[in-house]
Image (cartoon, rainbow, N blue to C red; front, side, top):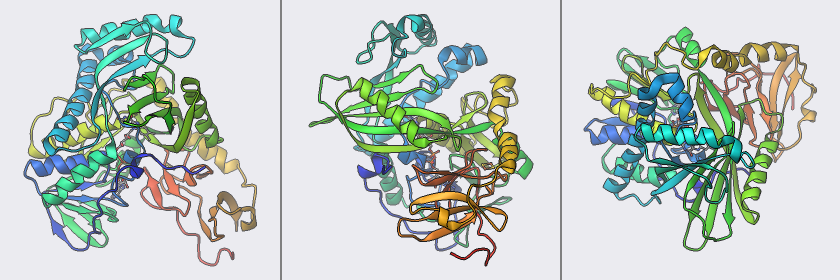
Length: 508
Ligand SMILES: Cc1cc2nc3c(=O)[nH]c(=O)nc-3n(C[C@H](O)[C@H](O)[C@H](O)COP(=O)(O)OP(=O)(O)OC[C@H]3O[C@@H](n4cnc5c(N)ncnc54)[C@H](O)[C@@H]3O)c2cc1C
Ligand code: FES
């Protein structure tokens, strides 16, 4: 099975050069997904000079893997939000999402970006055959949403799903690749310094300075928009403590042509945990559905293929006749209390993370807040999403549940012996942890037969990575770092690749 996200096939991104000289700007933005590109755009529009540094290609991280529902409805149910934070804060959280959707719409209008932006209804609905059981809690969600000023009504039968649910107005969807291509074109026109293949390899804050490709970018402010934040100028203990508040989950999506029908152009999410999320897009000559779900903690699935199968099965229940053309997966980062962390982690070093399944909106909001922080403007959400908030709103149970993995896997893995001690055990196109010279190695043989052998020890905090045979990646079960088959970092918190074994350790 070839796994590639839909969006890169729909919009070719402009290319940008590597950083090849020293530079001085007002703001250095690290990370070229929706958060970083929007931050660069808003800062540039506000008159700041900006350098945007991307490790690989722009819009190739989680933003390329999204399903791009634009919603203020959070993964945490409204009744839970109200219970945890009270009415005002729950309302402020949803207001933040709506402000971000409106910001995206404003940019689309201002820059005339053709990205299929559409306001659509969104439906939160009961699980199949659980309608009667779930109706009261859905009625309560609709009542609460109305009380907080959102346009939501309870309905007995959600279109297509035929179960009770809540219909929310002011939801939207778009093509994120076309949207960000539009922003990148504006950045190029406005003389913003955008660089690809330019990994921020060291960050200093006094004064704000970033090294990439052996060159130095100096600025007055740094925005870290790398999904899982780089440590930067935070000290190691604080960075490790902050990491305990985040948990990475893999989520799976399938895109398929469906029979043209009288279907609503809409978004849907069910009440499951994990939940399935569906968007239907109507085109002139065909209708298209994208269904996502079947999440699991990164690195902890026994067989990732089964998660795709679960999504496919559900999609076929909804639409019996489909032609699947895209399978992909990616990561979402959850937090201990369900709210994102957005703000300065140390003075002049701004981070935005923990977006759960709302990264299109919270990423955009993070960019808006970064722009305010640089300008010294008050922002209505800065205390709510404060990076240093102390109260563990999620309660002790959640905190312990999410952090049991590190000691558990460290202990389990120290007792585990890899099944093989020879590279011959690694088939073409596959990876395996093998024991070489008493050390656990992440060995991969590409389809042409070329072998790569790296240490299987995750450079973040020492757990042993696992082979993900579907995505052809090494995934760490402890805090969710991911590495390419040949060891390069794909997703943090690890900031370094899987290390090379000592020379002469093995012969291929
Ligand atoms: C399957 C799936 C479905 C989703 N559906 C939705 C949805 O419907 N609605 C929604 O709102 N959200 C959704 N999300 C979540 C959303 O896609 C993400 O939260 C969002 O894209 C994160 O954007 P970002 O810019 O913060 O991170 P990314 O897009 O990951 O960008 C971060 C960038 O930083 C770069 N980087 C990392 N380290 C460095 C370094 N040292 N130097 C330079 N660059 C570096 C990376 O290469 C990457 O390009 C979904 C996610 C997935 C996986
Ligand atoms: S040990 Fe933390 S991500 Fe691997």
